[in-house]
Image (cartoon, rainbow, N blue to C red):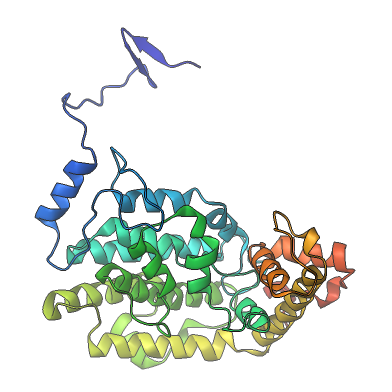
Length: 361
């Protein structure tokens, strides 16, 4: 179907009556001016092509951070998040993956940024890209790759400095991705710090919801210090914590959370660690992930010519190690596990098992 032509205009619908007044395009410079007028002092301002490692010409329509967001969304690394574990491998259709987690972090971060009057687009870009450095099999992949990287494998810096490096993102975007974890140095922008909170708020609330639906925990078991402050449902928790961060920014002029809500969030995270992340089945899954990823990396270190798109490297060299880690870290769960079986002769019984295979007490 070619649409519906009316003179020089083709409409998608023959009944279309959605009209606006003709006028000039709202291009980059107009949007930058709106930011200067509307954003809170201290917010990050978009300017021209942005601060990039490789010089570019400004886009006529998009701000520098809008370009970053678009590049991340269209990247292979972002798409692969759909096949990477958030908490458990082989998730059901209703459990989160790294991709859905990134989308929820972006929703929370943009809600906070909008309420605080800072740069929504920068917060969105950082949030969408923040987990692109994760390997297959969840956080256990970091433990697996630590053995091969002298400085340790951290998904934030790895995502910013390796996985997304070819996108030539703005320095502010990369800084937020690199330093979103609380164990890292503080991000240099308000928007980056907002994403740090949004990430923790998101995974605390939705990992609990997934665990409840999977039958791992019961909401009745949540401690009172959590439920009395932020309720027991994901909706109540997100609302409480988002409003708490916005309120703290408005009252204190910096990113944080009031003591009562922060204590509830910490208690929720502690509950999740005890009941979800370090339960026996989860630890067994982590051990299986580490074993299979170790084997895959060692396989490609010895055979660097088998790494897709790799430069020439001598078997066993540091270049071969980095190439192998980069390649395996980019795999989805399914591809990594299938490759282990097909290329290494890995016994499928040794692969990480999903929730359906757990024996629950």
